[in-house]
Structure formats: C-alpha cells, structure tokens
Image (cartoon, rainbow, N blue to C red; front, side):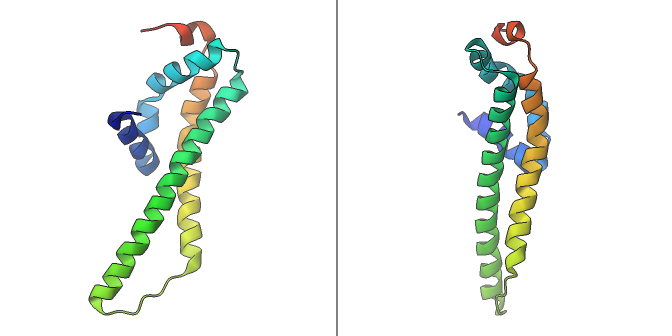
Amino acid sequence: MGARRLCRYCIAVGWGWGDECDADERSAAPSRDRRAHGAGTRDIAWLFLLEALLLAGGGALLGTLVGLAASWGFALLSGWRYALDASSIGLGMGSALSLGLFFGLQPALAAAHLQPVLALRDD
C-alpha cells in the first residue's frame, strides 16, 4: 500500500470524505480480480466493509492511545490529578468504528455492484 493511498484511508476515517472521492478508483482495481475469479456481490461488499472496519479500528486504537498519552502528559505538566472515565474510551472507539462503517458502506456497495465487464476494463 502506497503512502498516498494510506493518506486517503486516514482522511476517510478522520473526516469521512476521502473514500467517497476515491470510490471509483478503489472500486475498480481490487474488485477486478475478485470479480474475475467468481466472487459474488455480497463477498466483495463484505471485503470492503471489513477493510473499512479494520482501518477504523486501527485509527480508533491509535487515537485512543495518543489521546490518553496527551491527556496524561497535560495533567502531569499542569500539576493536576489525572482522572479517567472508562466509558469515554468505549464511546470514542465506538464512534470511530461506526463512522468507519458508515463511510465505508458507499465504496463497498459501489465495488460490489460494479459489472464484471467494467471491472475487468483497464483504463
């Protein structure tokens, strides 16, 4: 995976519009081989949704760790007592995963409904 593509994935998870801008490019290339080997519409949609959830989960985990470290560091530097509400971790990770699922749904459906002839066409 190239750095440019990784950046687009991070933007998609962070702001939600990166995958929509890149949906046609992403839909054609990976589904081209899968469609040629007999993968069904449901299989391709699940693969794209799984990819979106894995990327969102990685971003949620990394964001949680960075947020915990930053808040602990700020509390330490300011002389405050560090207090953490455990539900905030679950809510933050849950919202990141739900956003990843929501914004990964459109590219997944676009790739799944791509016609095999169009998927095999090389532009």
